Image (cartoon, rainbow, N blue to C red):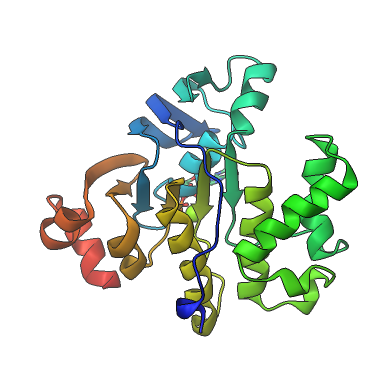
Length: 256
Ligand code: ADP
Ligand code: MG
């Protein structure tokens, strides 16, 4: 049913880019990101995959400003993260993040989840915030649930609300951390369909996912991580047909 619905309309700026140079991060003595270099041009769609514990979440949490790092630089639209709080806050505002576990506020309605940051962070008047939120709820095909609470929604519906909530702040880059891993199989498609529609609008997207059908359909590039390093970066065509690194091939064998 969702596949036949018209594509949602998202207004997307196209100048975003991410530049990660020599990024290293430790949790205590544990070295979890090792010399990561990654440039993401505006409009690129990158899928990040790799074994559990390889550092995928930590990498995108660093890009979103959720994790401090000890060495290297991350620039979003030329603004360096971590240099000072003001720049970091500005850079954070360029990214929208969607988590595996939805992370909606349970005590707020769907609409209030979407308007909260618009009102508190961007200081929009209530009515304008609601209009913006309804546009995005319509784009993710769930406007009828605006007054519902998260617990009244399925996992797939909650994740679509989480995507709408992130889009409300007009991010330049959308980061997804295994957005369908916590969903029952029948709900995965409705979330992937929304992500595919978003990709087709030209949004810059970095998606940690093991949904390889989705990766084939929308990714320009696949980044494969292992033990804190990016060990392969290739077009999706090359990655799936001829991954160069034995570990990437082994990984593909286990999940395809
Ligand atoms: P992935 O997302 O690829 O599964 P993570 O980025 O979550 O990997 O984790 C990378 C490594 O960092 C793992 O060894 C994990 O146990 C460790 N780690 C992640 N978060 C923390 C944390 N908050 N404190 C300590 N270690 C962490
Ligand atoms: Mg992870």
